Image (cartoon, rainbow, N blue to C red):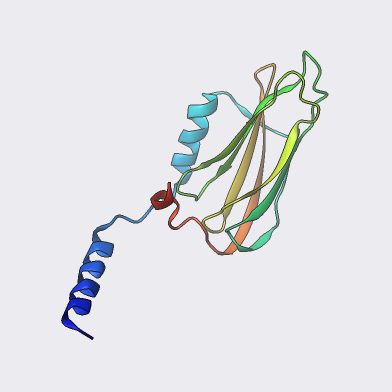
Length: 151
C-alpha cells in the first residue's frame, strides 16, 4: 500500500466516524407523527384491513395491501389513509387521498422497513372518525439504514 492510499483510507475512516448515522424512530416519535397528521382524535380498531407478510427476508421491498370498508358514497367515504412504520427513520411511510369519485378505498404498494416492527394503517372517514389496523412484521435484513443519507 502506498502512502497516499493509506492516508486516503485513514481520512475516509475518520470521515465515516464523524458523520451521524440515521436513528430509528421511537414509539413516541411515531405517536407524534400520527398526532401531527390527525390531531388528538381517537383511533378506533376495525374497518381497515392491512395485509403484510408476517416474515420478510429483506426490508428492501415488503408488499403491503390496504383495504378499507366503506361504501364510498357521498356521505360515507374515506378521505385519506396513512401508513406508519414504528421503527423506520421516518415513521410516516405513505399517505393516500381519496377523492369523491374514488371507486375502491384501498391500495397496494411495496414499502421499505428498517427491521422488525409494527406497521400501522389509519383511515380518516368523511365524518372525521379514524379507523386503524396494526400488523407486526419480522424483518431479517433491514433496509432503511442509509435512508436519511439518500434523501
